[in-house]
Image (cartoon, rainbow, N blue to C red):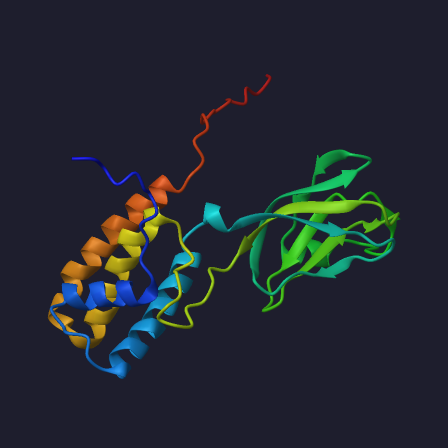
Length: 219
């Protein structure tokens, strides 16, 4: 018997909700059941955003600098940034990350020079602060932006996750719904969710060699 030849399987929101209710042996019959499940699914996606860096939500972004300007408002869907460099004349140099206290105590923030450090103020709409103030308007800051997972708005939406997370998301929604409708199933649904989530998070990583170089102190 021939295989399908396709690798496009995915679950939309309605499929995921139906699967979760079926695991709890609950028949999905009312609009309220669908509505509360969508709400739980959105909360679950926010929980997933807080777990670690999600590689599929990293987007290479650039911010043009303006001479003398130290603060730049970023898109509201950005939760954090990583791998920040200053690009000047086609060459990239790493910028160091500062804490709020470190940035606050930097003297002469308006002194112009080559920016070498940054602080990300993680507001509802994040603000990127750089130090020193740029001495020209031709430099750019380049970074990978961690974007929020897209919201669930209708039952026909496709969930904004890669296929490798589908088992974990379905188990997670089952666990969330158990807290509302099947409290006797909380323990076992939580266990399965955590197991499948850990498997997905372990898979969602870069496959590069891990190297440890010891630092030898000179006597």
